[in-house]
Figure 1 (tube, rainbow, N blue to C red):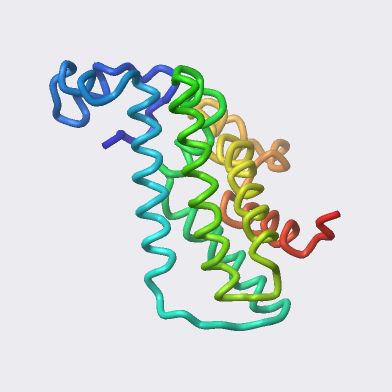
Figure 2: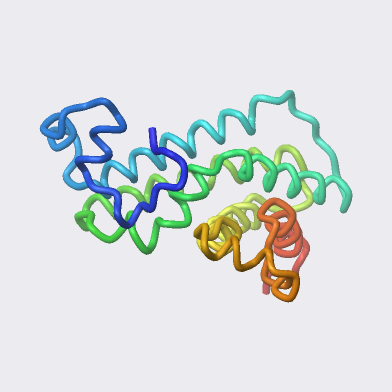
Length: 191
């Protein structure tokens, strides 16, 4: 639905309705605000991601190599879904900013259930970590997306500036960096 490069902070309900091919009045009938619509779109993206992630036949494995492969798979599966990453990155700064307390509470409760379901799936694949550790890892991964995705998907002017050889240090590879960070969190001491 959203076109590439869309700045979510500047996306109006009119534009969302246009991109969805709906009348603005129909959008208002189902969503209290544009942020509520973005939140629904985020849920749809998370559900599609989880479905794709869990579609492969289960292969249970143990050990550091299995955990590294699992974290790499998580990073790759997220990198393949830029809209999911963009919406997740905007969650605290845009999406949650204009919702009722009731909707925010419902979203947080739904997120807990989703994180638990994802943690059970991950634990079933590589049982080296407890379900609680995997749930924390999922939460930490969301936090990583909030910070990492914007840096790896810069505005066009920033991307052009970062092409300068002397600024190569600031260029980031989303999938590689995310895999490295998730792996580091997965193998770190949680205390």
